[in-house]
Length: 250
Image (cartoon, rainbow, N blue to C red; front, side, top):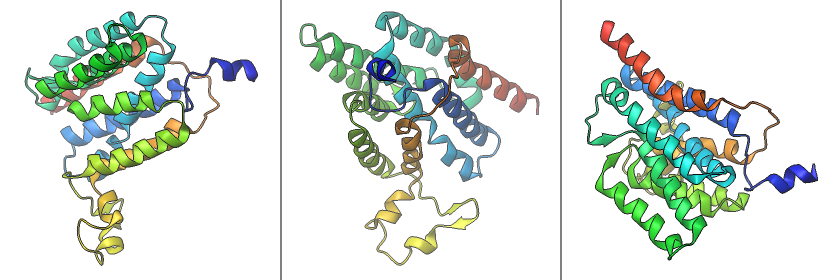
């Protein structure tokens, strides 16, 4: 037990095999909602869980990898391979980059923080965020910032919880307000409060539902599941291709 604790690099859940499976399922539900069931808000809500889990897996991966260069290269290659399928399935342009661009910039920023060469702990994360502002990509600069902040807060469960709560409340501003969730009318719980000023009103913004990922990031899970790398990286372009083919032929 003591040896296992010594191997831990973060205060959160490092069972990334199970986390990735949950993230993959949530992501596929989200994309199915976008492509096939755009009116089913519940599918989009479930999808909000995926990115924070991927961001946390990127942090844990960066902490444990033996080669940051190879880790970043795998993200780059997967992103390049995925881009055509991302465009076809979700109707994006070449100038709109997929989620692996966001993850790559986050990991590169972490690399700079870790190396501390020529002030890289400062300019690397700043540069990563600036680049994410220059190019359109999934979750954009806010996604890159979340990865970097999760890395900085990785050694404290309280810090991770506070970060996610604050970030999700901020992230939710300006996004769609969810009024119904699996038949539950949420308006009945906050309609009596001034719009935009109540905590309940803020928490029912769709992006705020990303907070549902927090227990999975914090609570230890007893599981020996380890996904092969080809599964972890291959499911993203693979499911997009399948969705595109189904949608195209239907």
